[in-house]
Image (cartoon, rainbow, N blue to C red; front, side, top):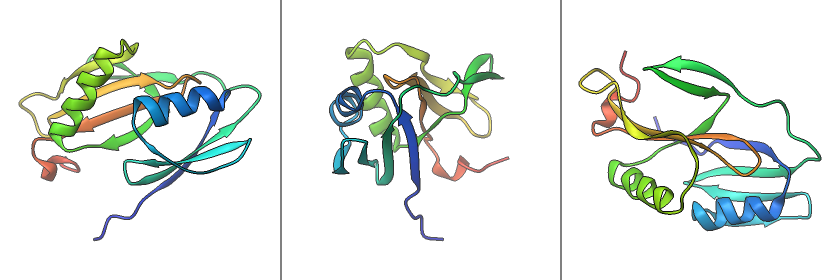
Length: 139
């Protein structure tokens, strides 16, 4: 199966902050935009930040591997080295992690590097990586 890009539209309360976060900090290429939205190349996927006057309610949390995982959240699976480089960059930027970069399910099926944080509008993001990509959908 050929992997095709997903499209996700999310609310933000400030496009300048979204531009600094997605374009600056995460390094996403900016695409089309208007005064109400910005298209981003989000690691090969189309993410659109839409300006809203107020954000929906904050995410709930679900217990996973002794961590409070924010739900809903979105993100991407990166190659291991790219994930580590992003984790180092985010730590150096003093981002406030919801869940610090760590190894989840260590020594088990589905072992992965993962980290959670919020964008400036409160959208929860997860970035993860697998040493063995065959483990992505392992049960």
